[in-house]
Image (tube, rainbow, N blue to C red):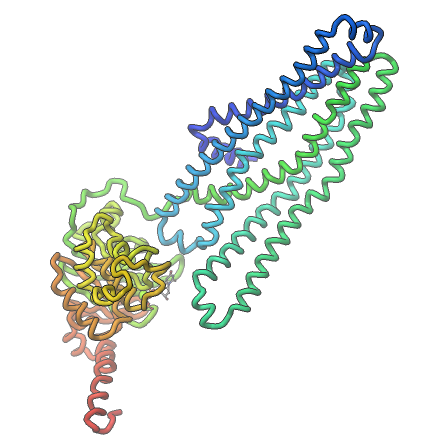
Amino acid sequence: MEAKRSKMKWLWENMKGYRAMYVLGLFGTVLYNALHLTIPIFSQQIVDKFLSGENAARNLENNKELLIRLLVGMVAVTFFRTVIVYITCLDFERVSQGVLYRVRNFLFRKIEHQDMKFYDVYRTGDLMTRLTGDLDAVRHMIAWVIRMIIESFSLMLAAAVYFVYMDWRLALSLLAIAPFIFLIIVLFRNKVAPMHALLREKLSQMNTAVQENIDGNRVVKAFAREEYEKQKFDERNREYSQTNQETSFVWLHFFPYVETFANLLPVVLLLVGGIFLINENITMGEYVAFSGLTWALANPMRQLGGIMNEFQRFSAASRKVMEIYYSEPTIVDAPAPVEAPERLKGKIEFRNVSFAYEHRPVLHHISFTVEPGQTIAIMGETGCGKTSLIQLIPRFYDATQGRIFVDDMDVRDYRLHDLRKNIGMATQDVLLYSDTIDGNIAYGDSSMSHERVRRFAEYSAAAEFISKMPEGYDTIVGERGVGLSGGQKQRISLARALAIKPSILILDDTTSAVDMETEKHIQDALEHLEFPCTKIIIAQRISSTRRADKILVLKDGRIEEEGTHAELVARKGYYYELVKLQGGIEEETREELKGGEVRG
Ligand code: DUT
Ligand code: MG
């Protein structure tokens, strides 16, 4: 009960600005139904005065005016009701769409500001479901369910009051059925609520399957797994469809009982009302009014099942929506952030930093310092924690232990925005937006000039291939940069990182897919940047790292070796082996060319 109340409260909070309009709409609904009840009042008068009773013929003769007035009144009320329905429909539509728009925007902002941990937990398909299907269930609640609840109860209440007013004994015998109906509805609710939660889960699973297949279509094709994926999807689709059916079937189990009770109403009226009529406890007109109003009890009873169904759908959906609505990122601005200068100097220090994903330790006691303008290279086997390490600097994650300083200030003391706008990053898997190449490079600053975009494309050795594209910088690169090679995407992402002129540049395997020649061009450009910049370069090739001021070699999340190229070669450790392996290949080729024997 507690949870339900807070859901309604949440809904009410989000109706801010629309509340008056909404209440007016609900009032219109009540008015509409109240007016509906006047029809039997009119007909009761017509029957009693003009159709039955001793004076009927005389009244018809002398009091025609009243008859006409009653008939005109009936028509006028009906017309007025139509107008009210029209207006309330508009009203509900406007309120529900307005609330939907607002909540959706709010959710998007929430998602946008979440940290990596959030994205590790929530699947894209599931988040999409929350933003679309679930939100629509919330809208439906505002536009239809609440209105139906009000309509049903106001109708029943008004009918009950009118019945009691006419004859309380007959009224009670009809209303005796109501408790049974409510009992059935409560039983139904208990049964159907978990079904809706399950249904919601199945929908999300199906959406996730679709999203992953669209996303990973290349992999599916490469492995010729279309049949497998089709089957997998078919399964999800069937599960969703079946759960949907089962959910509808729940009502079918309860429906006959409700229907029986609803159909009992006219029977009770015929029996009890007949006896009352014979005993002249009620007039014929009153009997007609009673019988003309039994629908006002029976219809809401029949509708309660459907309403409860929709209410449970809302309940399951809103739980999902509210989870995101009230989610808070763990990585946020410092409560009292330092006033950072427009441009940081770019000194970086790790002081005894350890890090774990959930419960999986990845980095252990990492300490090192990079002075402003220096270049540091990070090497090590795949999975040793290189990407994890650099993600701590812009606070994609927070260190589990130890501290990280930028310009001698703990990264957690900055405003996230101040810190991150100083960091240019080219991530390991490149994501380009569906936009022009120009737009992609200028992503960090929409007001960037074309000239600047071109200059940085030059630095990252992208200018040449861009100029060969059909529309140059205006070429649209598709979702995830379809239509570009891996190395081309890497170069655009490098240009994007450089173009914001960051104080700290982080390159995660950014030149792994470009040829040696291009890589050399990029390195020269990086060494002669027009702005001061500290560089962190993750790479596997010695050619990318040998000129760094400092090289860190990671092994299983620990710093194994640290020093310059010369120092590490002299140390004859992992780095030396790497040099031998990579340099060795070159030598081997040289030997071969000379026609000499191949060395072992
Ligand atoms: N890991 C997780 N969760 C994540 C990312 C990584 O548990 O979200 C693990 C996998 C790996 C370790 O952390 O065992 C280090 O991963 P990282 O991506 O830092 O490794 P890397 O050095 O960047 O590897 P590569 O050279 O393949 O990019
Ligand atoms: Mg990595």
